[in-house]
Amino acid sequence: MNYQFHPDAFDEHHDSVAFYQNRLPGLGADYLAEFDAVMARICRNPDIYPTIAAPDIHRAGLKRFPFDVIYRVTPTQITVLAVAHHRRRPAYWAGRFGK
Image 1 (cartoon, rainbow, N blue to C red):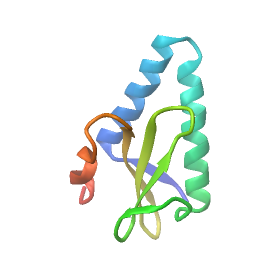
Image 2: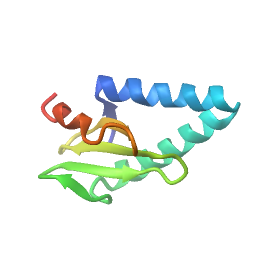
Image 3: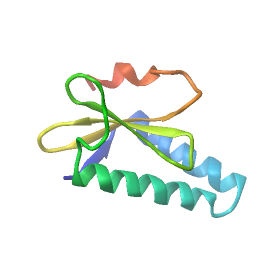
Image 4: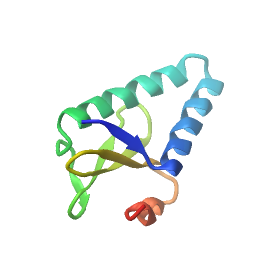
């Protein structure tokens, strides 16, 4: 199965890569590698992570970085709704369900 980003989630993801890369060269690549590993697991088994909003919204945490990947599962696609920082604006992404 493939995944796509909600446009705002893509911006969040891109900003995180840039932030970590500017903080320490190579750290952005580490963030990206961890994100890619989580997305590979999700694509292989979309229901591996807990459902946080019925019926199809899930959350997968990154281990090294303080982010959760919030995603929606449909029969043909996974949509990344948010790449949400653990301590910033909880559930700000909830309005993206229908988009």
